[in-house]
Length: 133
Image (cartoon, rainbow, N blue to C red; front, side, top):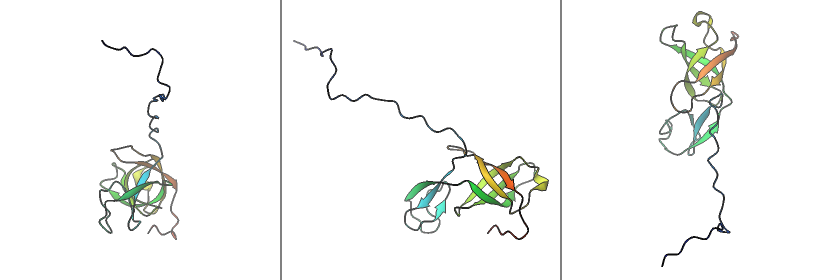
């Protein structure tokens, strides 16, 4: 003889809730910090300094300085030296390529979740006495 389940719920049952929604794509930029030597990196599978594959994720402040343009001016893609001491390839928005100088300060506007380049904008033009390295 088959027994049917009782209509009342189990007293120790826990309500199952859906996973919290993922944060919107925005200015939250996450980078990796090596657990062995502390070297900062962005989207790497191993540490460039010690070769470790153990990383912890940290939130970046999102500020940096332009280091070098990649390609021709219409592309407006740059290497950016972030304040947390890692380098990032980004697209620059909000300024014409002809008026941008190396050393200009930028901030992250949009950080992609998985693929794509982060989008940065100028915060202020560089001063001649500033050093970006």
